[in-house]
Image 1: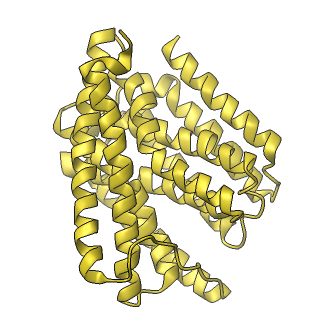
Image 2: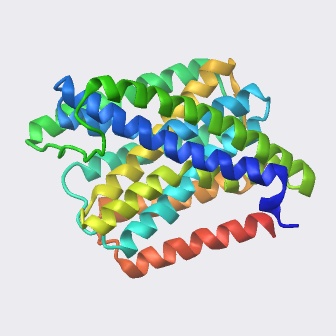
Amino acid sequence: MTTLATPDGLLIVMGFVLLMLGGEFVVQGAVTIAGRLRVPPLLIGFTIVAIGTSLPELAVVLEAVNEGTHEIAVGGVLGSNVANVMLVLGTASILGAASDPGQGIRRDAMAVAAATVILLATVLIGEVAWQLGILMLLGLVFYYSYSYRASKAEGTDVEDSDTWLPDRIALAVPVTAAGGYMIWIGAEMLVQGATGLAGSYGISESVIGLSVVALGTSLPELAVTLVAGLRGQGGVAVGNVLGSNVMNIMGILGVAATYSGGLVIAPEFASRDIWVVVVTSGFVVAMLLDERHIGRRVGAAMVGGYLAYMAMLYL
């Protein structure tokens, strides 16, 4: 019997489906509401859409904290950052959707570098104290505020996001609420299934968090990337990936640490996985700061590197 045919495997698949549908509902509903309330499109891109696509990670991390499985929570964040950079951005490069990052990309790259340094320090220390969690959240608010002001000063703007919802706030509100409910139920299913799978097959919870959970919570970003590539929207995926990685570290870990009164990080993450995050994020940040083109060959190598990392985790 295959893994996906087991009860735990079915829970994981159902959790994935609910996370993706819920994330889509929340993002589309929020964009519609923001449009009706005349919120500037730039603010939508920096906050509502970015937070919406990161809700699966937040839901899974909080559910893992509630279950006492900090390894899944931390592994999910680390693995999601690796997946965003190597798999999602690599796919964007293959599709030609990362050829022109545009203005503001150096600012976002520096934010990723700073957030990654903070993540490295917390992993090596072995804990994210609740006080640091609050500071991380404040830092994220400052990052969004600064980015908004800087973009307005540069005279840049973000195009209105496409939405399949009718332009009616009476419909957008229940759709957004339904999406939030699906995300939380999907997160519960995913964590339960992943935990059960780890126990059944003797796989550590940290590996499950780094692979299955991380990939599942990165599916919304991957979906956005595929759409951007098919529509020929160059640079859209790059900003999404960088913003998502900053959100994962500063926002999601910050919320988890504050909510739990301190997040414990297993020593095994310090020996290997944090360095994978540092190397992969550092590689992309260096290329963007040097204004180098991330082409199809580089993208293919990044996707190949991600698959090799997954194989290494299980072998």
